[in-house]
Length: 328
Ligand code: TXA
Ligand code: MG
Image (cartoon, rainbow, N blue to C red; front, top):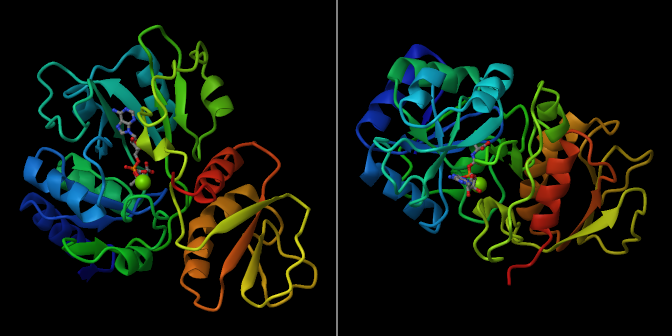
């Protein structure tokens, strides 16, 4: 796997050439690293699924440079336009109806009549999208079900075969995946996955309302399989504890992950932020879980669960609950 460093035009050109020739490139976004392919190239998209070990029924997000490009492949209702004006480029994904003549292969959206799209804000990826004009299909660059990567080193440590290069954009700003919303035909927005942009922020847009929750069809067929009960799992078990209720540990094989730095930390203590800042907690979450997962000396990890759902903490709670849920 080549590292394309420097963030300059040469690195971006090399990434663009690889993508154009149907190869996979790990790219930085403001949320997590993505495993990108030219979304119009069906064979390249197929290799995303095989490199990740991802089931073909789990649809991908396509990243674009502009709303104009998106309007060529999806219907863009007025609510979507308002969301785009407010939050793009940025960490929001919209699930929109595919146009009848949508040129993106249906494999990308797992045969669904909708396509998940976003215009990301990371400057390096944004430049690459503008210069290459390629629509890039990119799920998070991790093996299916494992913790998402927030640093280029994470990609290198967990994906091996089939990734031509990593475009190094440093650590990700938000550290949790984008907020996903759909716009059901009945009107309003429906939150499918909490992320850096909260539902209350979205509902501040004049005229925007919350749609009724989707009727449950079956547990194993959620509309966003990232919403499977068990996901983002480290290989070690993690156990959650309520904010402030620090468990007693008596072995050096146990780690405690605090939301803020304890007053006099012991060797088993780790923390997600200095003083409880929500953005910092989210930014450090996956990196710390990965670091602990790779320490042979640690067997059990206890993580403090935020007691607030404000802002990005709703996404942190969501990812922690899934990380702590054993697969069926
Ligand atoms: O921040 C992010 O969104 C990152 C970066 C790389 O952009 N991407 C990401 O992709 O998290 P992924 O594949 O790990 O998660 C995408 C989620 C999945 O849960 C998928 O089921 C859902 O989006 N999704 C994709 N297309 C959909 C559709 N048409 N309808 C409903 N959900 C969809
Ligand atoms: Mg993912």
